[in-house]
Image (tube, rainbow, N blue to C red; front, side, top):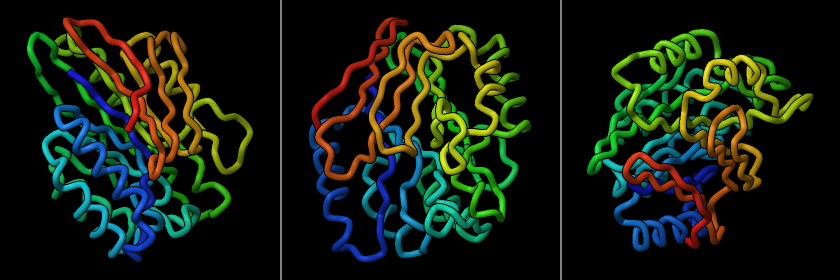
Length: 250
């Protein structure tokens, strides 16, 4: 099983502004037709309805092997002003029609999908890391929240998932500290919840690619660049219970 990690697609209202991401997705569809694709948020630029339509039209060909989560730009104008309308729009125009197996806005639990390929069974766990607040100074920050953390802890403790490989993904950067626009407010609590219990963590948000190995007791934690126009992405391979990571050309 191979998994390609993309992030921060930032679909715009005007289709002329989407040339880079459409070109990138065309390459992904051509070169990685057997990969599962994980997109860690900011799929659109400010939650406008036309942006969601543009994103859906570009992503619908990946339906069945695509896993997404929302970012602050999906849920809020300019990425700073949270909107319940935009949050609901993400679910209605992307999560549901792309068959994500659950919704993300408001007080939802993790969205979980189980994929089996050969002898490998993999648990894809998507979280909404948006802090739903009316303050523009807080919204770009992230927060997993007690409800999702508790549900995640319960899921990871379930004996039926013990032998599954686990891929956890969300939008916000868990390692940035003391940044009022980037910090995940409950990252330490998240770390205690998942320490040594998942095989890979994927996220985006900062538009900087990075790999953290053997951190939080987790083999691979991957930060994706913003993907439009970029020439590489992160690739996870799961084969006979072993997980590896490399960067690949797009």
